[in-house]
Amino acid sequence: MKTSKFLFFTLLITVFSLLYVYQQTEIFRYAYIGQKRQVGMQELLDKNSVLRYNIQKNASLVQIGNRVSKTSDYVMPDSYRLVRFSSSSRSLYANKNTPAKETLLSRIFSFRNQAEARTINP
Image 1 (cartoon, rainbow, N blue to C red):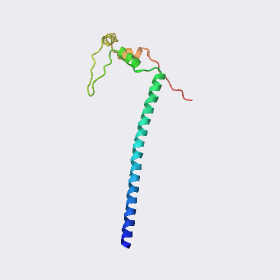
Image 2: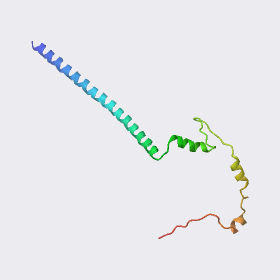
Image 3: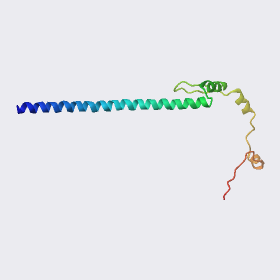
Image 4: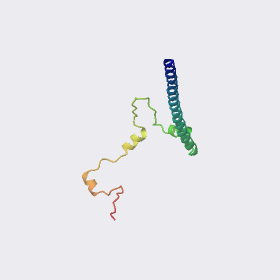
């Protein structure tokens, strides 16, 4: 009789222990799922705030696309591909009108065309 009671209580304690361990693992599993959902919700809230800011500043994708399409030199390259542009007619024309290189004498006796800032020591 004593051995049967011992086995019964041992079996009962084992079953309750297994149920407790199962319950704890389920709690952790649901906590991870909840944490993953919380991260997803935070990302959606961040995207929402960015979109609200863009709407507030009237910076829609259509307007940005229109601004980009006005410049003819803009090209969207494929991934891992180098893009080289030939010089446009404007830049060639600008290069032809550049003055010749300055000599040492012309640099010494010429006035400077750019503004120079000097620091003021208090």
